[in-house]
Length: 139
Image (cartoon, rainbow, N blue to C red):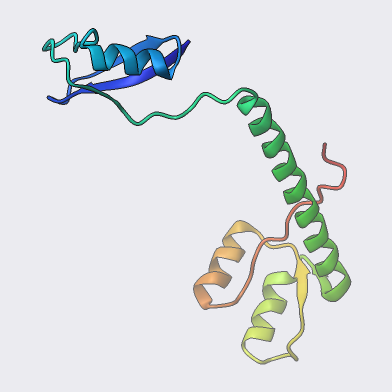
C-alpha cells in the first residue's frame, strides 16, 4: 500500500491509500476519486517524502559516525595544541595579555582561565578559544 498526500483543485488537502501508483491513476482518471471536503474530482498528488526502509538505522549510523569524527577531531586538535604551544597553567589570562600587548614575545600558549577571565580577554580583543576536552577516554 502507498499513502499519497492529495490535493483537489480548490486546495483542500487529504490523504489517500492505494495499492500502487497505477491504482491512483486509474481511480483519478475514472472520476472515482473525490475530495472529502468539496467532492471535486480534480485531484492531484501533493508533494511528499518517500518512505525509505532502513532510514532510521542509516540516520543512527550516520550520527554515530559524525560523533566519532568529532571526537577524533577534538582529540587531534588537543594533541596538536599540546605539542605546538607552551603550557602556562593558571597564568593563561596574564600571559595572553602580555603577548597581546607586546610585553613578551609572541608565541602559542594554552592553560586555564575562568569564564570571567576568558570573557574579559575576548572583550579586550585578545584571540582566545577553548581547548576541546580530552575525549580519548570517551565512548
